[in-house]
Length: 202
Image (cartoon, rainbow, N blue to C red):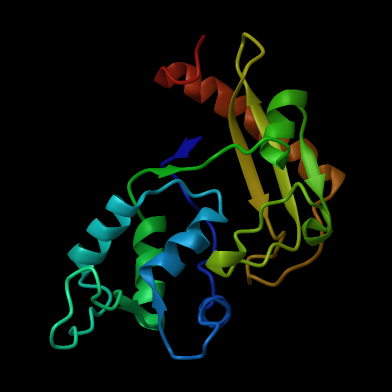
């Protein structure tokens, strides 16, 4: 699945700090590129080492310690990422012109595609189908997935709403049946817009 749109509030610095500290198991104040890739592999974000390295090079992220005398390139210490580098890397990956996600078998999105019905999860942390982007520091308290279905009855997109809140940003609880109906109406409009734009046909 791919998307060019991401709306909503930015993860707090406190949440990102908690994610960094979880990866920094030895408490040295930095993590390696290998650790970053391992964390990304646990999320639904699709990326590869080459792209991550390109982002690091473009933004001058990470410090490569100088090798000790007599060591080879293979023996050189790995690139280190402090908390600022870590946050910047994640921000750059999430702000890419196009995001790509894996639809994992047994996941909520997979179930939405198969059932062609909305799924309202009021306690995602207790639902094994939910992918919570924990490595990115996001805390998912509630989530609503709604399918966008074309004229042929095929799911061509999914609208995801997370952490129902007021305009102030305060979390107000799980999504309601009214929210599900509203999202279903939104999906029908999106299906028409996608048809007019030439997306999701066939």
